[in-house]
Image 1: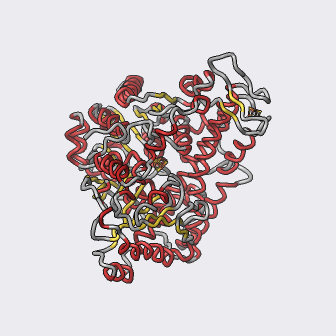
Image 2: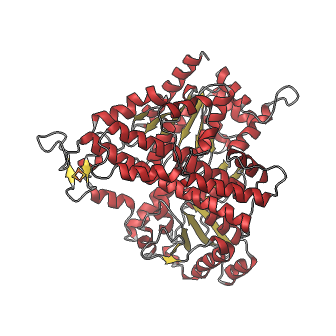
Image 3: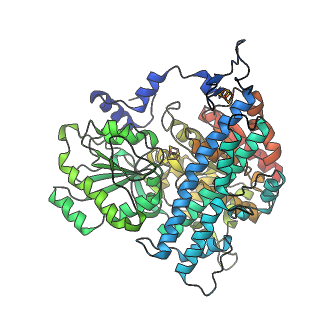
Length: 628
Ligand code: SF4
Ligand code: SF4
């Protein structure tokens, strides 16, 4: 079976089933949308005041300026940094919620500090004195300091101080150190208001500042404090793809982003009262599975199975076997309730920030987290008996995967190849040794979403296969992680697809060639790992034989992620072109000039094989520059 929409068999089957069941999917809607507007696609449409909407004619003799006089450079730059603001806001609001959950854990709630050692490490970043204090006191002071980083009124955000010395100097010199996480986002909205900033370079500079506030601020705080609260991910086995849904169990899909909800859902699903009730309605048990990034959060920490990525959310419901889809925030297609209305599935929204017409809303409240989680699951349990048997079809496809590679667990894993009596343990030295000797040519981070403009999962899988064949170790997050798990790239046998160097490393350390590092906010783990290696070698991130890619990206969050990677020194290849081509100047700034400033730059290459080659060439050029 071949399908131009996806490479993934279970999804193909569900697309076919959707057609039979008369259900519309994202691919159908994308088809109806064609041709998409060229003004929007190239970024030259502006509607930020009511003198517009204005559009710039790039090819004919139509308007070259908006009614206010804004030209293509201004309009493109303004639109782009508004995307960064959207992305940075989404990540940062998530980080704020996690900080607040830590505060509640300190003051007494259903949450607790699971990793005191990591809390102490984070406390140090914030300058919190830990000596002689009890853990709750440290948690409280750290949470307050973290919350201050979102809106501090003097000084600079504290987390970026963890970057290596060279990187910090670059940010200082170019005046892009975020003052506070929220402030930079607000300033984007001000600066892009009608009649404020018209200088595309200055506009992009503000986008950079906000993105650093995301990667080295909001996202990093979200990841670090999630580890403190929910536990440090460690390698664990799991399964991925729609085949993880169970015919005889209550299937609960946890979809969205914040572990505050999904972690409690996993805990509550083991509650005896609920398990009894599940049996009473004829089910063998409760099967919680993950989708998108909240799925990544629980798979990393509990090994919860992974149902699917962004473009599989409708397909999951089309199986007819999802009794409840529990959602919080971000990347939840509003269409899920429409799809659900054709089956028995209940969509349950939980966040006051994200209500969806047609969903049942049960507001999650961290103060009564466990009880509410139980109440939400009960909705799914009671709904089991409403399944429509003739509409149930669960595809059998599922793949084994090893997941749970936090920076800490990677370093611990590397210790296996260290002779403890002769070398220090707990450092990145073994990784550095492999790279310096050339056993590994380099490392790549592949991240991001799905997008109907790319055959589903094709971009991720093909690009990554080329990289590992060239002995480049790959770390992934977000929806890329699902694509890799589903394609079998996260099981030990995937070593057979690697070059000889990477294969040997996989065998010695006992890891797959593609390491799952978590959710989208966990892209900050990739920054931390790169930064640790750079610090160890007394280099900057931009000196390392490393590259990044987002082959199927779609969200504003991905724009912010791409920007903070580039401005942290990473060469980053995008598989989907951002809406910037309407301005030659902005395009040149992002794909050429920016390298001279930050050491990283963007490239756009829709063909994953060519994209992989660009990354490999970059890695080899960096090796040459280092003389290794
Ligand atoms: S800000 Fe200028 S370009 Fe934008 S809609 Fe208003 S008049 Fe048009
Ligand atoms: S990778 Fe993209 S689509 Fe997937 S959860 Fe993250 S932002 Fe959403």
